Image (cartoon, rainbow, N blue to C red; front, side):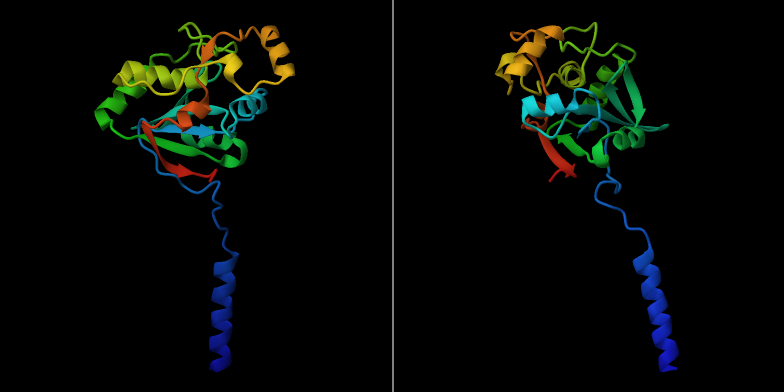
Length: 203
């Protein structure tokens, strides 16, 4: 009986240890409407954005929890309502940071998301201009909070104030990006005091 008991215990141990364990990068993350989510994208400009803003983040969007699922409103080409799992899987390693507004209630955050959804279908702005004809990711989030809840988030910075190398300074005009223009980076949203970090795979 002792031998049989030990064999049973061994079998249970092997079964438990052999079950796939969820890695920190893909474990479930509870999100709410209005949460700001950041990731390291795999876009062609991701490394540049991360380097000049001294941050691991190169893409940001807004969460919408709806009857038909969980989505991220994001400025890609074009501004889209992307399923949350698809959005997260697109990022490097599936890593994500989730920010939540400290002082806005559900109704206000619903207005924020509504303001972002009004921009669906607009083209992506690869020149990072501050207009409504085209939008880039952190511009969409910043304007959604301003127009939906009257809250200013993110810091406007001149391009020339970023961590630019000589090569970057030469590249800017070729990309149609002016050194005097202002923009908001994902990094500035990540450090904004209006938000509290409720989850991060980057820590």
